[in-house]
Image (cartoon, rainbow, N blue to C red; front, top):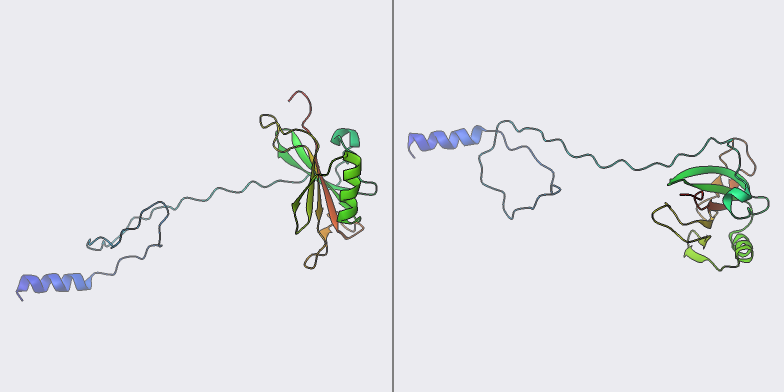
Length: 185
């Protein structure tokens, strides 16, 4: 081995190993073999793109005034307690009501009231939806509807009452009403 070859071998052996990189890297095709490049002594740091932040629906104040049946466009189950509302976008809101009535009894009530069968959307947790009108994509975020959801199960004691000291402490069933946006929209 010549002196030049010996210097090259010793020089390569003294360089630090390359900095590990996550595998696989998003947005890059993975080569079958890593490229044969000499390791660099310092690598520039490339900032990783941040995932988009999820949209969080914020409730109204807990003591906000309950909506009226006229405002909702549908009767509220007798004895159901207004809990809160959320901005659904495009001038619509979700209104939540807690009930101690069973899921099946609430579904029967709204079937009779609305004269519609509605749709069982999920078996577990049981969720049933009744559409109140046609969905207009250009003016609505969600179709006007009444949705009944069972919250009491083997793993849940029910939907917690958001009112401090409110009774009951948990609701076995929740009614969600999405009225049509105000006319003129």
